[in-house]
Length: 188
Image (cartoon, rainbow, N blue to C red; front, side):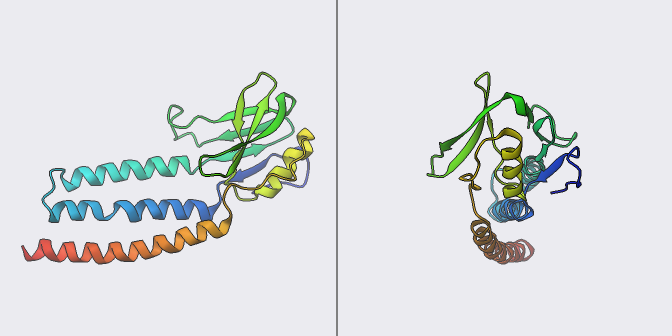
């Protein structure tokens, strides 16, 4: 998060680096062996097509992970860099004067997410994976007057640390799998 000491400067919150690193690493761990295995098994899909698909998917995932939340005196805004096509990820903005309430919703897995409800009944998902989430929620409370004392992030950092640990283990297994497949290709 970056914020200047005066109240007129916007507060900028980006996705947590732990979450970004974990999800990018998991994607690589799940997809990296596929082209090597396709070559060894003579799969009907050529490895170059898999490399292309994996590359496009990685760029798409990275685009999603560039989300930026900006809070200023006028409202809250979720944006993405200019290189991310609007049809792929569309941001949103909501003036503080339009915020009616912050409403919790239960997810399919039993967690809680929160939506801003606007005066006209539209719902806007509160970004919950940003670095400095507690500070962001405090600013929302200051700007709207809505009690946010019970608002917590969807996932705690320890959950992403565990996922990152298992991802590193998976990457080690991937390295072993790739080494075996390269040995097969060279010997044949």
